[in-house]
Image 1: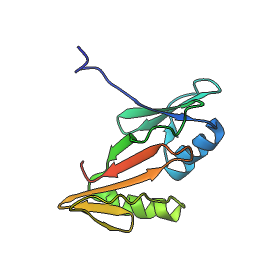
Image 2: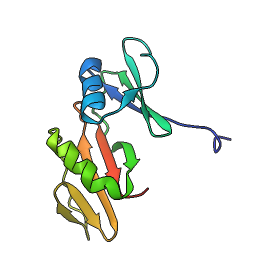
Image 3: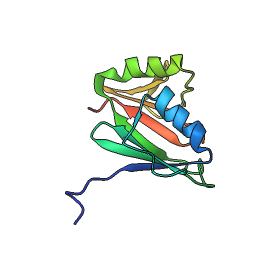
Image 4: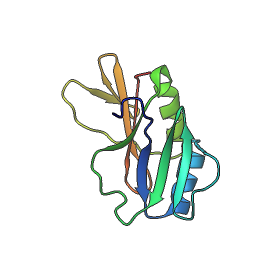
Length: 127
C-alpha cells in the first residue's frame, strides 16, 4: 500500500525562529520552496524533506527523530558540526568505541546530537 510512496521526517519545535536558524545555519539545510505558514517549515535534505513544526511537545521524544546516512563523510561532517558548536551525545554500547563524537562498531560509525529542542538527530556511515 505505501511501499511506493514518499515519506518525510517531521520534528517539533517550541521556537520556530530558533529552529530555522539551527537547521539552516548549523546543518546547512535550505527551505524547500516557501514557508508553510508561521508555524511550519519544510527543508530540503537529499531527495527527501524535513518538516519542522511548532509544538508544545517538542523535545519529549527519547529516540531518534531524524537519521542521515552520510557514508564516508561522517568524520568531515562531524568535525564541521563541532566547529559550529554542536555537542555530541555519548552512549555506552557494548562493543562500541567513542572518539571525537563518533561511535565506532566495526566498520559502522554513528553520531548522535540534539537540536535546540532536544530532538535526537543521528548520522551514520551507511550511504
